[in-house]
Image 1 (cartoon, rainbow, N blue to C red):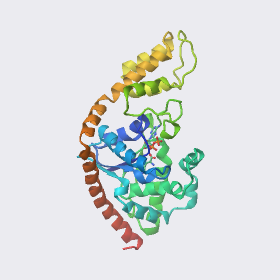
Image 2: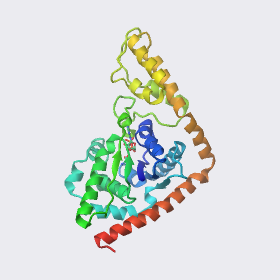
Image 3: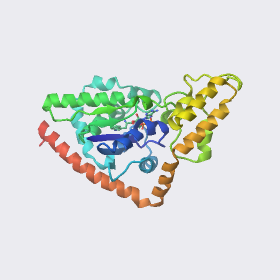
Image 4: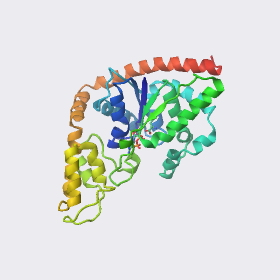
Length: 321
Ligand code: ADP
Ligand code: TRP
């Protein structure tokens, strides 16, 4: 089984990325061959800063490895190290109806946040479809925000097969875990780099604890019972805490007598402890600067081999070869 996912190189990875995409991807390494990549071409659709891009690519690589991506089991590479993906994106563009892209929420959201409405941003889902179809991917672990992009990918696979024969493209399937499909951020909205409401996976302890203290709560007095429904603190705490600790957090809310400051401190402790092993691994990885480059070079070679095979098949099917 071929599993594939991509993470944009657009800033520090956060708890939403971890539970929505990285953790499932790491777990699926036991069940098949993972193809995991850093979506650097995609990152260029919303920001034009060469220095930041280079830095972010490296950060994402280090963080994903620290979080359990095993380069012995999975193929880890940069999207741009396999330029064949652009050719497949072009082929898919030729069967992609404009209205399919016109209805994509992600484009509209990004433009409403002030990102320039360039062609690449509009065609983003076509490149994403190419990422997936280029490796005959079967399972694609992602968060809920990517569901529509997976639907576009499936439509394009169908169109290609209708135009050029069954088997030209392999039909992929999204893996979206209900419990972690949408992790909420400090302000109660979806956790996202673009809302500046994230809990990063890695960082300085003091800063990370400060972020937890920024969580928006209501003004229930310390003595009174606190609502447990729609509580950002509880929603985040359940990701990190044991069942017993979660149960006492909930009963302490219901009973009253504990303040939000205390709850946030418990959350900050659990969040900090949860990533401690990964933090240690990260320290090790950073000590050997050549290691990450080596992993990405090996990954790119393996990914290109596979891409050449699949693209060869598609080129023959469409009459280019
Ligand atoms: P961001 O929204 O912060 O820019 P990306 O778009 O780079 O994050 O997302 C990378 C992966 O992480 C995708 O699979 C996406 O669905 C997942 N993801 C991002 N934010 C969340 C979230 N808040 N909850 C669940 N999954 C998320
Ligand atoms: N669009 C994805 C995101 O913003 C990143 C991505 C690019 C991706 N290509 C992909 C995810 C292919 C899964 C499969 O998170």
